[in-house]
Image (cartoon, rainbow, N blue to C red):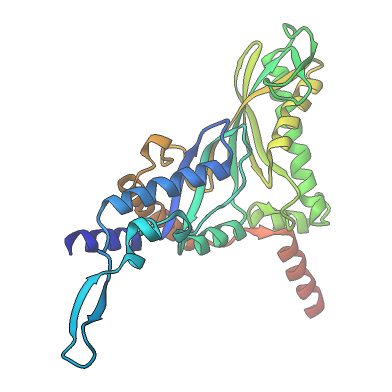
Amino acid sequence: MNNLSTSEKAFKLLNGIVCLYKPAGVHLSGCRHSLLLKLTQELNLCGVRSPENRVVISGDTTKELNVKLEPSYADNVLVVGPRYQTQDIKCIWTTHLGKRVSGVCVVGLNKGTKMVRNLQNNYPLRTYHLHGQLGIMTKNMHIDGQVIEKGRYDFVKRENVDKLMSTIQASNQKKMFELANVDTQTQTAYNLATKGLIRPASSKIPLIYGIKCISLDLPNFIIEVNVINEYESYLLSLVHEIGLKLRCSATCTAIRCIRYSSFTIQQALLMKHWNLNFVLENIRECNASYKQMSTLPSFITEQSYIESNQKMNCVS
């Protein structure tokens, strides 16, 4: 009974958000399968209920019958399989990370899937470290692709890179107001900016909220970017575009997500820690962080701002 109680309690505690560290070179579906497989294996090792017995009635029907209980083979683990299986645990991720992307991956387990959807609807920012190399260009804009061009990079200066970062950030901030159909030189734009960052109404429009170069050691560099609605090919093309703007070639060597909303890389569990004890502890911490986030006001989207502005105009 103690083993049964322990196994059942552990399964009931698997409800919430888990912050994982996704390694590069592994598909997200593979990470999901590895996590669920490890959890179910440990749940089965904790001790599960014994097979149910079946009633067997034997003997001559004209005389007193023999009634006894025998183990039911239809409920035996060797017949029906392990008590806990991977399909018993619901699991979805907040944002899709490409195969080449590593870093923070936030997933929801069981009842935590609803928390993940609420988190997605809140339009959280993601922070990435983009590692690049100057003087080389590949066919797929990643270092693992076929090299199609090589060139000089010794003329690139830190001030040129910083100036380019400021230009990219300014153009994206202007794009943010353009999507809201608001002139940046008006009082309406100022009122909108004082309310906080605006999120795109569409989940298909990438938007950069901050970008800076945190390391430049020619030919290698690291760019930190705060972005929303990003995807792997967009981040690869961003590094490629930076190289073109600097009048040389550039290719991406690594993409690392270091933050998803308030979930940081320090909270992310390495693959070697994807076991029941560490996951349950991580769920407790992440659920506490989620509750703190839920008390904060929702982010502004262009669509919600436009609708509220139209209502104000109708009233006036």
